[in-house]
Every structure is written in structure tokens, then in C-alpha cells.
Amino acid sequence: MSDKGTILVVDDDRLVLATLAHGLSQAGYRVIDADNGDDAILLAREHKPDLALLDIRMEGKSGFDVAAYLREYCQIPFMFLSAFSDDATVAQVKALGAVAYLVKPLDIRQIVPAVEAALGQAGRRVPAPPVTAAPADAALAPGVAMAVGVLMHRYSLARGPALERLQRLARNENRPLAEQAERVLQAVELLSASGD
Image (cartoon, rainbow, N blue to C red; front, side, top):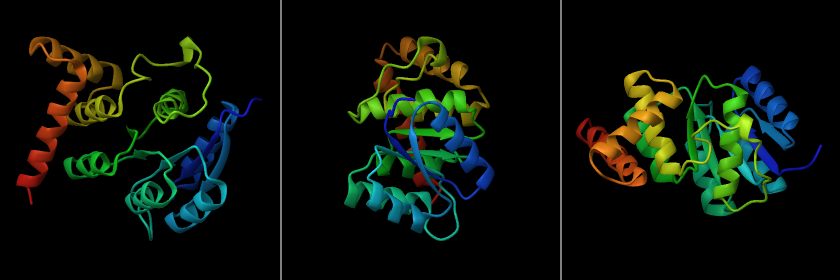
């Protein structure tokens, strides 16, 4: 099995952690895992992974704490995998500069293409994914992927219909998809700020 890169997976749910680690290993990645933020930071410093996949809410250091550290001190790109998609969470994910934000529950067949797209955005070495394994939105820009996540949560949509809704909004307002995504995220930030 080829080494497509090293992924740090962090989740305090051991079943989720084992599932992700197994699925990513099967897809050809070297996986290091941690079930808490402190261990995640130590492992990141030691192994310098190509990408970190972080749960947000954990005991001790949160995924946000780990992400801020990885960005500041290690320059390691990260994506979030979380059951939480409220407006404040989405705004913080965006502010931290995550390359992707995936809302649980997710199938490993959705996560692998998202990881490959994130590594591609981060400029890491990644062979092109097989066409059959990648959903239509696998290579979306981070802002577009986050806007899709917001629409999934807001309207209880699956990923495909949420992307279609965003594309339809962009067409109706005659805007590029990335600009429409940015407008959705700005609206979320506005709502989040007005709720304080």
C-alpha cells in the first residue's frame, strides 16, 4: 500500500477514532491518533503530519485549541469533523482557517475524498482519487465546503442537495460559487454576532 501522507486523527470517541484510523489506513495513509488535545499536540510536534482531522469538543484542550496550536507553531493544515454545526462553531472554524469542516455522522467514503481534497489544497503530495470514490463536491474550496456544511445543518439536507442549493443561489444571483459561499458564511457570522 502506497504512503499517501500522514494524517493525525483526534477524537475522544474511541469507536469514531478506530473507524477513521482504519478507513484512512485502508486508503493508503499513515495514521497517528489521539483521544485528547494534549496528546494530539505532542504527536503533531513529533510526527509533523501532513494534515490533522480534529473533533471539536473534547475533554481538556478542544479541537479549536489544537487547531490554533497547529496553525501557529507547526504550520500543519487541519480540518474539523464534528457533530456540532451551530453558527458560532462555524464562525470559529472559519476564523481558525480550517481547510474543511465536515458534520457528523459521516461515512468513511465521504471522509477519504475530503481528506484528499484538503491535502491537495494544502499543496501536499496526493495522487488523484479514483473518480468513482469521490463525491461531486470532493474538491470544493474550503469556504464553499463550509457553506455547504451550513446549508446541510440549516435545512437538514444531505451534502449533494446542499451543494445544489448553493449553486442555485449563485446562479439566481449571478455570482461565482465562491462569492455566494462567502455571503452565506458572512450571514452566519452576522447572526452569530447578533446573538451575543
